[in-house]
Image (cartoon, rainbow, N blue to C red; front, side, top):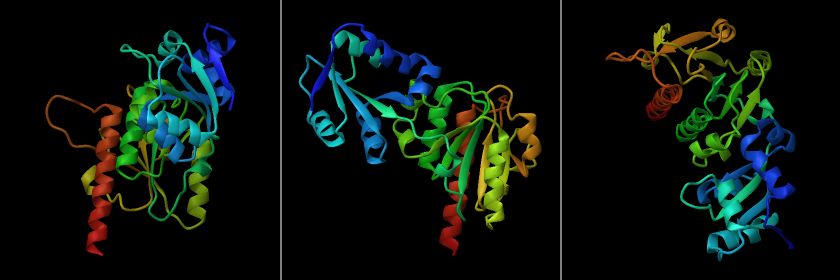
Length: 276
């Protein structure tokens, strides 16, 4: 396979830079940049489309990088070291390899609703790092997928992808502009006999998270980092739950709250399996 070379800040380099910093152009291109052995490996293992592999034109490749390029059949791009360092956004030098990865469609059908469904929805997040952290917890505790709603940070932002430490590629994440499409998706599942409960997290929730049955099919809602859940989502909740706390803190960071609730759901489900 032929190798393209980038030695100057030419049009191709500028296009790659937009994948880091320009959400609109990233969305139009339907691709994003990924770095790191684990994230790229997981992208390949989970069947994501690798469109190009960028590497240091002046440095020998590791065995992993050689195997990667042989295995994916993507475009190969040899990049001058200084330019690769810019694309890597690393303070300690360039990543060995960057991958240009294609975005899947934002279709809720990518998240399967089944009898033991555990879904997560993040309402209007402002920090991409929090999206990545929540995805990491969703992966760890067995969630089926993450929906990001409203005017929100971009899950494909490099900060989000890095914060997920590879879980981005194993847990479906879908962007949905409003609650209408999500509730239509939930409604179809209910009509098919899967009684999904929409459960919001709130410091003044109706029940303590440990006292609420999270073994049922459930869509857990996490609110905006500052304002919490929108009024529309509050009205759509079948139940609200709270996390008991002591001390002077009135609430947890959104990603921490998600981790606590997901852990409790996992704990309850494992306990139920053991008792059967």
